[in-house]
Amino acid sequence: MTEESKITLRANKITNIIISLCELYDLTLEEATDMYYKSTTANLIEEGVADLHCRSDKYLATLVWEENKQ
Image (cartoon, rainbow, N blue to C red; front, side, top):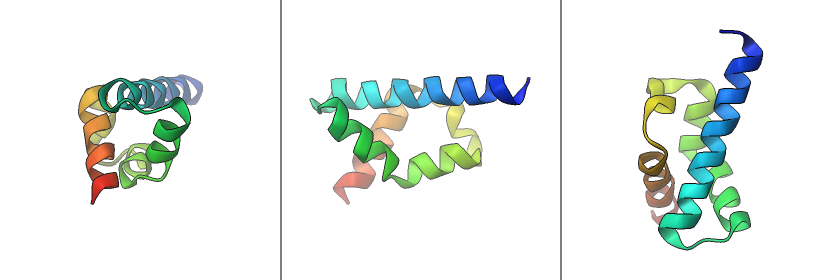
């Protein structure tokens, strides 16, 4: 897999997580985007920790939501 394809897959994953946040928690796109990028989960996904990118989008959206509520 090329570096470019890895970047594309990660960008698609992030988009799907943000959309899931909007759908699950009735957030605006801006609110969901801010919440995602301020989360520890976002950093872990970016670093490739624990294969989080393999988890479902809704599961990861729930993790981001729970982080925000703590």
